Length: 217
Ligand code: DX5
Ligand code: ZN
Image 1 (cartoon, protein in one colour):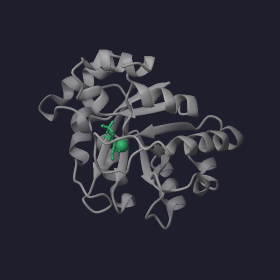
Image 2: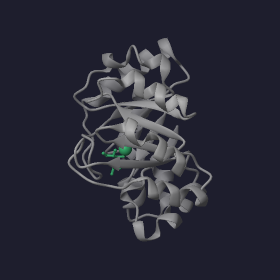
Image 3: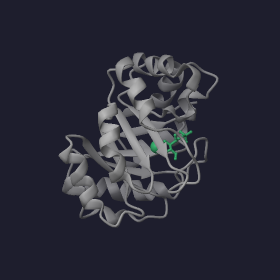
């Protein structure tokens, strides 16, 4: 199981340090949440944050684009140092083109689906992607409660991946704590995104990540 700490919950005044702590604790990649106040009702950060992090970590920087026109920003994030992109199925009339655009600039491509979106929409795009992201909360905010009904969907996506493209990552994002981490892994997820459970707990980043791996509070 891989861990992708989400810096949305980090202390931005000491972001480099927090990412270094996560790297030392064995994080597999750093998850960067980009919000535009339009695709989701919140603002977060832009490519300058990726550019600042690039020289201070060797970990891949995974960029979760919760924005209305992802194609317009791919090159800017790639130039800043993003290694992979997660783009949403929702609101994208030309998802296949977006995925091809990501590949044409040499980056890993993933498709994200919101809690109300059925797994079936992934069937045709799955052969073209490296990751599927099942949102386990509605995108836009950290610190939300895990939506239990997504577990059945994670199981369905796992079956689809095993059938069509076994090397594809199955990632979950939102409300991940030691308990929901365990449930998601049992359902078939192999990458866990976690923000508040890693950066806003009263434990150290290292302790928090150890607990997530163990599936115990
Ligand atoms: C939510 C973001 C998540 C967020 C998760 O829209 O996509 O990556 O950082 O935060 P937690 O782990 O606190 O639910
Ligand atoms: Zn995210």
